[in-house]
Image 1 (tube, rainbow, N blue to C red):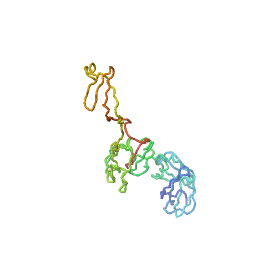
Image 2 (cartoon, rainbow, N blue to C red):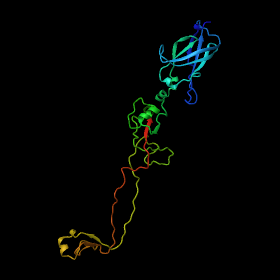
Image 3 (cartoon, rainbow, N blue to C red):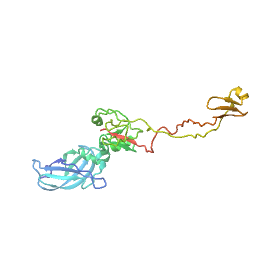
Image 4 (tube, one colour):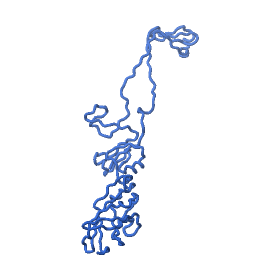
Length: 303
């Protein structure tokens, strides 16, 4: 039997499971068949096979090579690409074609590597794999561009944007727009067995609805001294001209109130009776009521 009469078929029976980049060399599991020109399987035994990865289907450059001894039984063999020469994950950022050489003859056509091996490319995997589940909400210190690069474009800022009819979050919940979580504190929805920690909502309240600012109703208590007879001073200009020039005392009304012209200021005396003072408090504080806090970006998965 001449080697040039051998035909070769590559079948991807199963694709490798990725391990950590630092744990061991990544491998691509392939299964192939070796047949004679008449279509019968080659004899059982061991064969030296050269495996090459190209960046083109018919021409191009070789980006990786390994020579391995494979065991053939019934014309079928299995091999892990990368078991002899490590596979650099970076080469999977492009379309690759597998070429197989037995002796001096490289068999054709080359076989295109399909989707799963491209998971070896960390950059490619990050673009196509979304973390979490639809409807999840995340806080992050990553800005929207950085977050999408690390977690996938299925996540978007929870900024009140409209949802497309095809967005999975919309098809599940019926929401046509996202809630706007910018600058908001999040609060857990009441459950049916809740202790009513949220008096403004119940377990039947619509989800993702905002509440306006509010301060719980409360009282302010305080007292003033009822200290009997005492005086308050005022400028004489508040008296009439006649009172300032001629009157020793001018009665202003009931309850014993009077003015006394003593040549300087006019003293008002309440005739020895107790009385109260009404007062108001001035507003203080900032623009909102808030606890000590940290600010983060907030995102929601919609697909």
